[in-house]
Image 1 (spheres, rainbow, N blue to C red):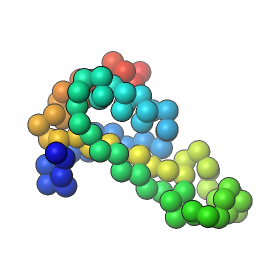
Image 2: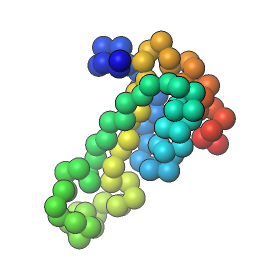
Image 3: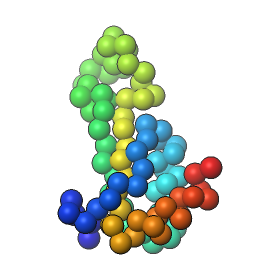
Image 4: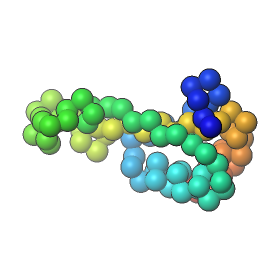
Length: 86
């Protein structure tokens, strides 16, 4: 189980494709992870793309993905991502 006390940040990206590849690599190696999202898209729920564009932000960069793993799995997770994300 991953908690706020035993987790370590593995990856931060705005790319949905990159975070998807990272999650696939971690799942393939049997490594537990947590994805935390944040960004302007979460703040503009219900406003639609017009609200995002009006604020001048880039919709492709509107959601930040943070992937956390258990501290004991961190090195294994880095190795899993090394060959998968390039």
